[in-house]
Image (cartoon, rainbow, N blue to C red; front, side, top):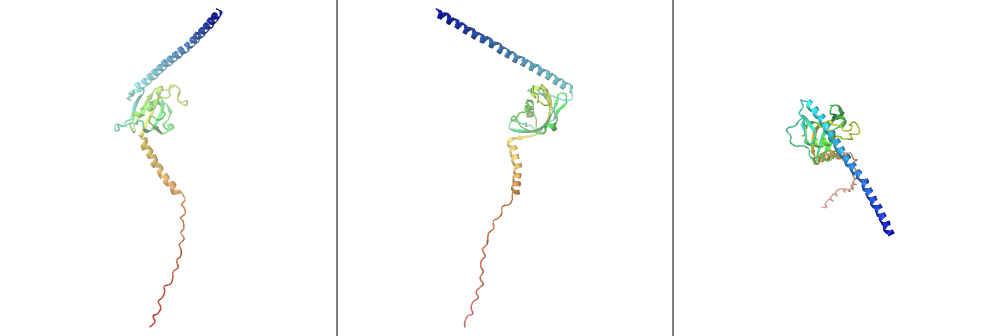
Length: 228
């Protein structure tokens, strides 16, 4: 009878322990879900606020016709190429210049600072907005892009001149683009003259001298006078 009491006591302690552990875990899951929901709501409000600022800028600029992208940014053409129909795609290399300003028009990075860019389309890390925007452009076009922060450097900024949650005004000039295969061939052709030059500058190997054997030349034999 005593054994039954002891076993019952131990079993009760185990049940209470399990229940306690379950009760402790619940608030963590609940708080995590609440945090995520608050974070999503905060981002939505931030995005909406940035979009309102951008739309206000567009509304004031009556001379410029902006196009709203389905990807969540706006753009207008400074130079438009209506003759070409081809745009950069994955497998191409794009050559472009760009300049970064804040949405009030203050230069953050000049075109000179950023230097000409060589971009392997969809294979390199660039701003989300530029990744899509460059694929809209034709050769020789110059386009102004208005990117909300989530299409630019986002919450972190660039840790230098661009702060957290900063919408940007980026001007891009697409100088040219070509396939990776064509680009590689051009690089090989550019290198080949250098190889020829290197070969020409190598010291000439000495040419082996061949010793010529001197042949003894015999004087012609005069015929003896015939006896009469």
